[in-house]
Length: 252
Image (cartoon, rainbow, N blue to C red; front, side):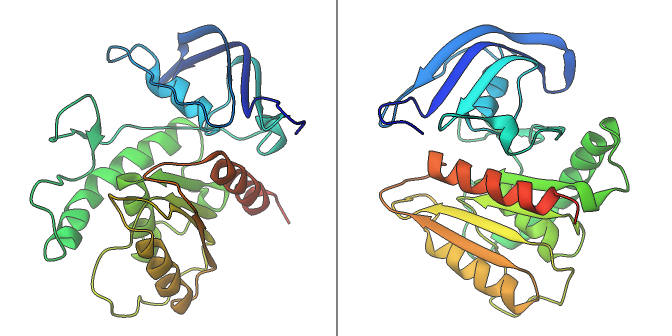
């Protein structure tokens, strides 16, 4: 990356809806982001915000146009990958347009694990449908899960419980709930945990603790903690995730 070059750049980017790629929801976007910029993306439900943000985070390729991350096209990480970004099943009960896998109202150490377990059926059903729609049913060795916050919690639970022995997991700003007891031995799915040291919603220590528990159960796990970062994913985190996923999904 050259000095003063934008960390993210889009040129004439077009993308289809996540649940129906044939429906165009982002068209002809030209946009760049410099280090330290702060942007707010607003719009009605179905306006393409999720697709736009997924591309911005480096988790989705555009159908047309060019996308560069740190001066490199995203395809340099995952040139042939298929992406899916299914919504959580329920509206966020804290208000706003967000979605949730489980309610955070009154949540605490005594009930968090139970709520995650109650969300498993919906998670398994939604992810299974997304994989089947893209031809990856029964091909978990070619599948990676990438989750943020509640999505990270559900992704970590998916591998720790043994339900989803996928090729890799990236969990950003998440935690592995439940008792501190050792996890049962499981398939050695590699896991990359990303967390901001300044996260005021989920403490960064949760990712450190999760990595320790996963390693003890036979997983390959690495926790990357980013200074001065809150409940978010940084450009450095996206780059680390892209490199990690490319390595995990490249045939030996």
